[in-house]
View 1 (cartoon, rainbow, N blue to C red):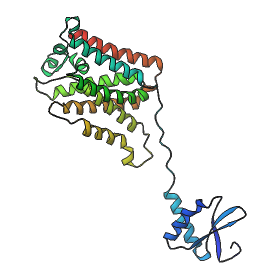
View 2: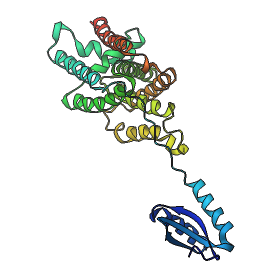
View 3: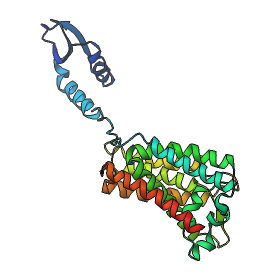
View 4: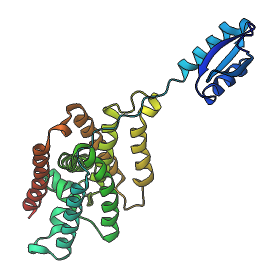
Length: 291
């Protein structure tokens, strides 16, 4: 067949399967082709009159089907488990202390988010309210989702920076919630911080451009995922503070953009320990101020 001057070699391959798709491309365009085997190599043949058209079609096909480079995932700073363990210890310890009136404190009364009290200067409530919960079901849900997204944030931010950002996102989310609420409004729970963690993860993945080489729809995938998570879990019954979930998500997203720009997560182990100590100190100082 190679000696037949009516047929010319268009492509060569070591494997027959490497030419099969090209045959289909030419067939779809009405160009007849054949495949032969000679001297250990497979040849894709086309008629002499079709050579230019066939080559143009395959060049266009190659241009449109360049394999996308693999997604470059962010560097893993640590496993994220240490931060989650500290988070769980903190909220369960506060629940135990609240249930047993530890130190003679009115944990619930002095720590819950109360819009009027915050406006009057009791700003510690923005932090203390994040550690209080109404019942076992409430704290279990926040333990589950907070732990899940806390691991993600901890892995890519580092546990120290990650949980400081989650705490600050929760505080900022509560502050925004107070601004838009009536002075009699009150709430408790870590869900504001949980949604801050969702926003942190989404903003960091989007802003750092790990999906930038894809279409814009795929590039926004982390943001769409955060919105979908809010739509699925952030809107519940009449006891659900939807506004707090929104403000937490927005606050976390803004902080995530900042971290992605400054690359604080790469500051090193000593900086991570400082961030972790700062987060713990904020919570402890808030509770000391409350009582």
